[in-house]
Structure formats: C-alpha cells, structure tokens
Length: 223
Image 1 (cartoon, rainbow, N blue to C red):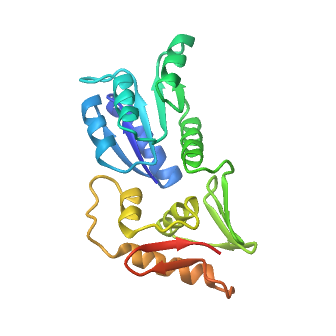
Image 2: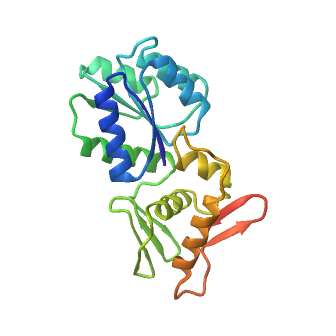
C-alpha cells in the first residue's frame, strides 16, 4: 500500500511516515505544503492520504475540496488541532473519511489508516480471505489451509495488495505504483521475482494455484 502524508511540521511528518513504513510496510510519500501535496495526490496512485489542515500555500480543506472535485475517491484522514463540532461536520461534509485530533497516538493513527484502506477497497474485516487463503492485515500473517506461511516483507506487500482486489486483474505497473514511493525507479522486473516466490510458497502442499498470470495484462488472485 502507498500513503501520502501532507504535513508541514517535518518531525511529525517523519514520525508518521516511519510508523507507517515500519509497522505496516507501507510505501510513504511526504509533502510539506498544500500545493505540493495536491500535486502529488493528483499525480500518483495512493491508497490513503493523511492530511494536515494548517498548511502553507494551500490549506488542508482546500486540498480536500480539490481532491474530491477532481473525482478522486482516495480515503482521506484529517490530522487537526481542531476538535470543535462545527469543524468536524465541515470536514466530513467536504469528503473527509476520518479525522484525528493532535496530539495523537501513532498506534491509533496506524489502526485508523489500515481501516480506511480496507473500507476504501470494500473490506470490513482485517482478515482478507481468498479460498483457503487468509491474509491478516493486523499482524501481517498469512495462512493457507491453516498452515502458517513465512513471507518476506515485499512478498507480503504484493500479496496483501492482490488480496484487497480478489478476482481483479492487477497490472505490474499498478503494483509498482502502490508498493513503492515517489523516488522508486519503476523499470524493473522485481514484481516477477516476488510473484514467483509467492507462488512457490503458497502452492507448497496444495494442488490449486491462487495467483494466475494473464499474459500482457497482469496478475489475478482467485481460488
């Protein structure tokens, strides 16, 4: 998953990004003002946006309005020092999906971000199931037929993204855009390597293949 953090306080932005990277394995981009944040939100594919309200150049509410006016449905969580009822109502009516009042606990922010991403992809449970495969997005564990499967960090990230979109064809480009941050060089065959490793580990002891390749289109996860 790939998350955009739009926050002008450098230390807070870095702490949030570090928590998302280390605890959830997300790719994270950071913007330090509203204008830059809006440009990045409209130029890249994100699974969630964490948005501060008090930003230089362009306020958070304006950024949110632009994102929604452009038709982007990316879940947005507002980080704000405001907690007045009127402010919350305004934010939710403008298209915000959730909010946290500063100062907040990074663990709560992580949990809310995970929940937003799940709901944004049509899932209510933190455990994603495809046939006899179970992907637990809370503890990042994977089981097939009850058997615990040890994956590398990147193998898990690829599988989690596919599990969020079961039976959908997911291109290599889409995977690259959602699994790596802004600085990643996208001309690589790493996705094929991770998918190959996943196939080997998931199919061990099972006759049914879960990850299928559609030549020239991408991958599909289905039983």
